[in-house]
Length: 126
Image (cartoon, rainbow, N blue to C red; front, side):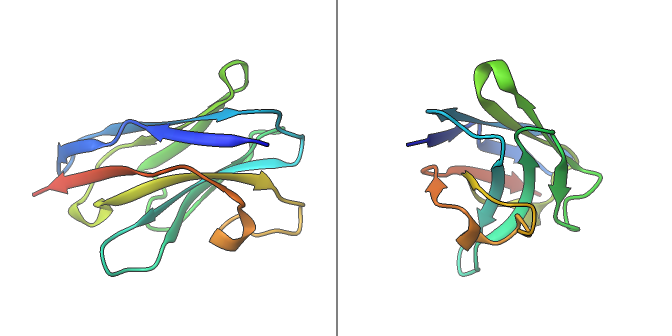
């Protein structure tokens, strides 16, 4: 069974950058998708970005397009979320998630993912 663990959160000023990492342990398949979600206090968990492991195709929420970039390192079984031009509204706990999702999936719904990390706090100050 695949497990994922994220790291790299912290405190940064608005306009700054952070890079989150997520390492997957265990065997992944060609249909495996890794996603990033976030949850701010009092809000629903929301989709941030996802990447199809086999082909590297990427997906982004409108709110982060042009500012965040997702990438993968197959050799390290790792996925990264580079976050630039951070805003105060990006403050949240960020979660890495993974699962086998077929091509008809949206990749943006929490219920599509069975494996979740423990979360890492990202705080953007004004």
